[in-house]
Length: 120
Image 1 (cartoon, rainbow, N blue to C red):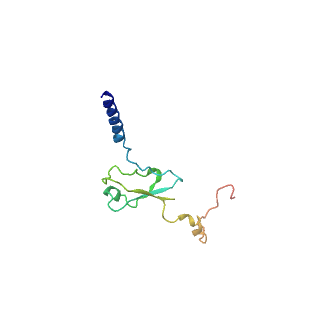
Image 2: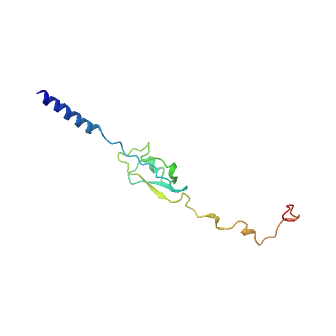
């Protein structure tokens, strides 16, 4: 009889261990930075919480991105994820025009000689 009680206590302890040993909810980490301007936006599905919908179309540098699920998230099973971009800047590169190119044909406005020794 004592052996049966002992085995039942051991079985109950093992069952309780597996019952309460729930893994913590997976928290999405911002992706590792592959370059300085690697960026992410938060991609969400229909039925997403208002907190993440307020962040729609906002690009973050990868290391500054908020962790998912957001602290304000009200959805039981958050399905939000990161969408990756090589660069946060999405407009065209403005460095196409060489510096001083627009003044090429204009007359110089200097009236005096240059005071630098190299130019004398």
